[in-house]
Amino acid sequence: MQGGLFSEAEWKGAYILAKKAVPKTVPTMRDVVRQIAMLGGFLGRKCDGEPGVKTLWLGIQRLRDFVVGMEYVQKIYDVK
Image (tube, rainbow, N blue to C red):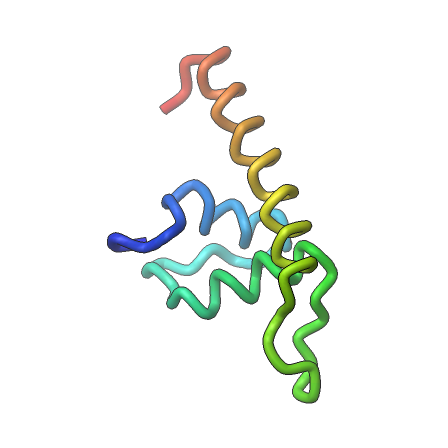
């Protein structure tokens, strides 16, 4: 994210894992964090507030496994 915490592969991977359309422009940090938290079990209802550490940690673990797997596949098949 334009100097942010997440690489392009990470923020796009968060949307792919959620089976949502990948945004054409870089999403805000808040949107990416909430998307990752949803991978960890965060529901995102109006009354839920912001995601907690545990849901973020679980979402990040899932996302990292996905990104590393994709990098491995790209290396094996020499895909760019």
